[in-house]
Image (cartoon, rainbow, N blue to C red; front, side):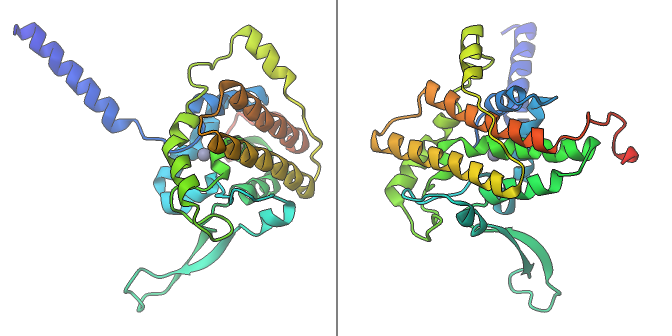
Length: 276
Ligand SMILES: [Zn+2]
């Protein structure tokens, strides 16, 4: 092999290792393109930022992972009261075997997942905020409202306990095996071509959200549609179709638009945190 060729190979191998070792494995979620589509259709600036919570999650998967899903038992009907039963709670933490140290208080999510509750918490936090602070809550809530329409974020996963405390081994194994394929179903379709883009817009129907109560009802509606679709795919042992995925993400867009309409008080403040 000539010197030139071997250098080229070294470069290719180095580039490959760089990509493999530095690009974070995002874990389970709609793909970045699908989250971007949802945020962009809802009218957000910098829609790609709505994927950030999946990157933050890597900081502490045990505590931040459950913000992205709720492992609903297959027969669950989500209601506003149901949402309140799966919150984040303050708990005292002491490292194992260290009873001599002072406990620290940390926010611990319900192990079945707190996706629905987290959306409501962010909505309440963003009300009355403006500028960069509003934008922070907005890209977070955009992400979780996006997760809401991924059917398998609302279904048993592996051998984890579902919301009712039971383990649904067969459904959970199926969901775990196909989760990535569901996540990536829209990958080759986004950005949408013109015809699809027009059709997509016809599926967006902004509900009226003026309170946490309204929001909980809308979260429950999408969650129940997601659970129903997950059950259908599981019963038919198939992946989500492209059209089902697009229609579902449009549910997220509709709700995100309603949240923005209810909470946005002014244009984002370009001068950054010091102005707040
Ligand atoms: Zn997520």
